[in-house]
Amino acid sequence: MQAHIPLITLLTVVLLIAAMITVGRCRALFKISAPATSGHPTFERAFRAQANTNEQVIMFLPLLWVAHFYGYTDWAAWLGYVWLVGRVMFLIGYVQAANRRGLGFLVGVLANAGLLVLGLMGAFKALV
Image (tube, rainbow, N blue to C red; front, side, top):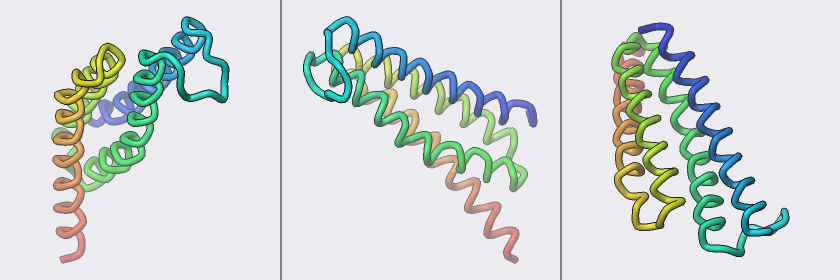
């Protein structure tokens, strides 16, 4: 499972690129020039979905690698894949309709919570 952690990291970058492309396509489709961040509702949802994903990645990647560092590689990998699935669900759902983002968001939050617990367990074990 050790090779899965770098793969999950790279897939996270692919996810960020996909979100960026979605926002770019919406800008072109609805003729919304940068630096505008409002206009058509679909563009606004795509923009918010991308921004929220960027915010989540800032927490996710350190949690993933800390859990891996402390020896919880298998659990970290599974939770990493769960987080990715949740984020894809979130992005697709949010772009479609704001009320469709909840399940994907919840999946991602729970995966992050699991990674946080693993990281804290490892850190506390290392201290004693």
